[in-house]
Image 1 (cartoon, rainbow, N blue to C red):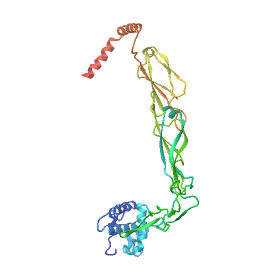
Image 2 (image 1 turned 45 degrees about the vertical axis):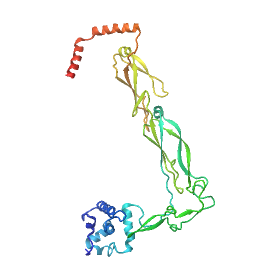
Image 3 (image 1 turned 120 degrees about the vertical axis):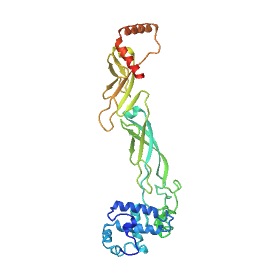
Image 4 (image 1 turned 90 degrees about the horizontal axis):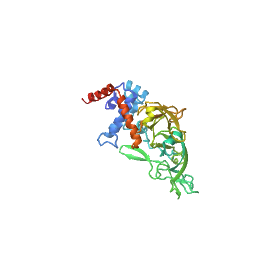
Length: 372
């Protein structure tokens, strides 16, 4: 190795067998630590250049092989010479590859940019979510100015080259040992300036509007799901394509029905005679569906449930529907007529006489055991 210069593997703090990912991570850590804009260390600039030189050689398989066999002299004669300005292009290229961005000061000029995506939230009833619906929505967004056709310039006028950056869109800023390229502040990186800004949009090329749209909500959507409307977002800058609109759905709770995925649940109040003797009851269905008849067998207990197939939520992007689960709840009357009270008392006496004593004792014994 050439004397007076540290071994490149030592500079990055890695083994000679380190792979590409390890090299990149080591360089990122050192570059963040010693970048002249971030570090106050007196040797930060030199350490930063040293790490960049090491990564520039070792990240290139051919240069790395030559370095491993012949040291600095085998890498393009001298590798990256920190004292030479001729290697700045390579240095900035290496830094840009790892961290992204444009560090070489090259011109970008005006570029078409895609518009931003928008998010709009709307509320749906359970019926609308289950069976689908059509809704008209208003979307506040920016669109191309009609007066200047999105150019930002008064009709009949145009743009002139920015004198600050000579039309390059970027200016070179000297920071110590380094020259960094930054967007031109005068022309906002576009490389040109409007001769006469449009009065309607103040030169922005975009105006705020309230756009009315009709959307179709498919049957079976659920709370929190989104509908994507392509091209209905913000207009793009400098004639770029528009973004997308995402409509997020919020499903309101229902006073009777409860949804669990593709299934609906309903608590159905019934009377004691109906569950004791058995009966056919009417189950109200969601939406415009006709009511369904349900046979409740004699001896049904409160809390038991019955499943009605195919009366639940339509499967989104699929065939068929879920089920409707009916939960039986025995309704206790709050007031009884004298005749009803007399009959109920007679029933209670009859039940007490026929109730198995051993079964009753067994029940209370279990309760006592629990409390003990």
